[in-house]
Length: 106
Image (tube, rainbow, N blue to C red; front, side, top):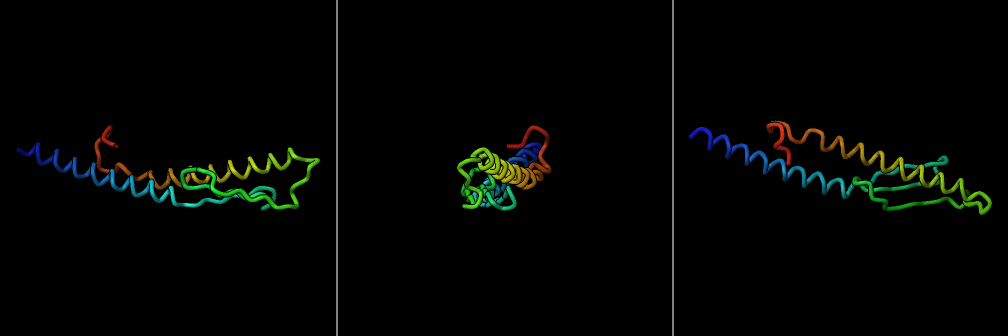
């Protein structure tokens, strides 16, 4: 009956992995990642999942005759914050699945 013990152990390991993954997803949801553009004139804050939470624009950068610059700085700050969040998520999740056979990752 060794096979059933191995299967039970594998199922327990998969359940622990699922719980750990859920915990890390919660941590990512609560995490805040910040990036700036234009020397700090535009600041974006995203969750660890990349959802935009805050966007701050310094009044000095608001120039009605140069809307393109403000748009570019905004996009740059948001993209950088999302890239940082994606990297953080990748690092947090990279060690999950250790010990499970290939194809068993939930």
